[in-house]
Length: 75
Image (tube, rainbow, N blue to C red; front, top):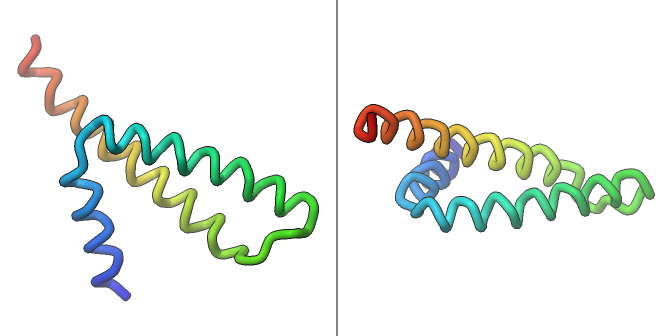
């Protein structure tokens, strides 16, 4: 199980900024749909909510790390 998490992190790290932004948009849309499903008691996989939320957090963290790394180079 730990290997799957590592592979996912590595996949995110090699993705370009545009790919990350696209994936983030897709995940936020999925999160929105999952919230609706949960509210209407139609949620088939409750664990998916947690996975999507954590993946969004990983992407945002990676984006902020990249922005912070690029900041001194510009200034």
